Every structure is written in C-alpha cells, then in structure tokens.
Length: 229
Image (cartoon, rainbow, N blue to C red):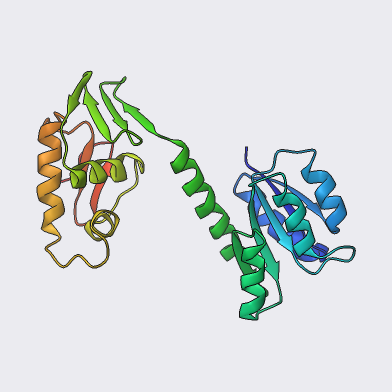
C-alpha cells in the first residue's frame, strides 16, 4: 500500500484531502505540526508527503530540507505563496511539485494518482503474458515469443510497450502517435494501423480473436481481451 503523509496546519483542509485519498485506497496519516510530521516520517514508510509551508512550529521549507537529508520520497508542497520566486525556492530545496492554494481536492487526488501510475510503470521492466509465451523487457528493449527473440523496430517496440503497459485500457490512435512519434508528427494516423499489422504478424497475433492487440471500433486499440472490430 502507498502510505501518504499530510503535514497541514488547517485540520479541515487535511481531513478533506484525506477523505478523497482514502477513497482511492491510499493509507493517509495527518499532522498539523512540522516536528510531529518529521517524527512520523521516521517511523513509517511513506511514498508521498503533502507538505504545507505555513506551519505553527517550523517552516515547511525546513521540514522539506530535513526529509531530503535522508530520503528521496516524493514531496508535494501546498502553499498560499504564489510568487514565482517562492515556487523556484520550493523546487530547489527538494519539492517534486509546488501547488498553490486554494487547490481542489479532486485535482490534488488526480495528481497523486498520476504520480503513482508513473512510479509503478517505471518499476515494471519485464512484462509477461500468456503464461510467459510473450515477454517484453523494457530495460533491454527486447521481445520474446515462445522463448525466441523477435526483431522489432524502435517504433514497433514503443507501440507494443505502450499498449501492454496499459493492459485493458483503450488508447486512441492520437494517443499512440503522441506516445511514439511526439506531438509534432504530421503523418497519417493510419501509420499506427500499419505498425499494428506488422506487430501482430511478428508476435504471432493473427488469430481471430487476437490474443494480445485488440481493435476497438471507432476508438483505437487495447492490449488483451476480446476483439471488437
């Protein structure tokens, strides 16, 4: 479980944020003082600290500095300070994000979820499917089918990994293009269809329904499930 620590002197604010985050399945701890937050941080394995800068005992900046001496935990700073110089200072002392109040709890929750999606995706280097018959190694950038290495072009590998790492999620052609070619790509979105056709052939996915790459009518593609063409 991803433990989150909220250090915020306004109890009503922290309780609202806590309620939103716990609804998403996170374990959330709250404290109103910086020193108590540091003490709690040293006792529990936290994956994220949501830190207010205006605290009653010590500044949030000092809390951030102390935490950064021993940990690379993700830190979101919350503050009413809106000057660019304040933001730069916050990032320079170790904050990963600098969020100004008032902030919607829904937006903060969305940012937290996006953070953990990125963290979890970076942890996974080997994806395995169909009882190991298809293996995708992100770190080595190689693909094996039934134990044999399959040659893929860089774009084909990026396309396969983008789909496989989002198993079950429908990705539009536009999303795949941005993921693989970048936003400046000015070719046809049918380029994706050509790459999908080549990928299916190379990984032995030409059966009906396909085992891996599924076409979702008028929407795009997804990895896994039944075909919907």
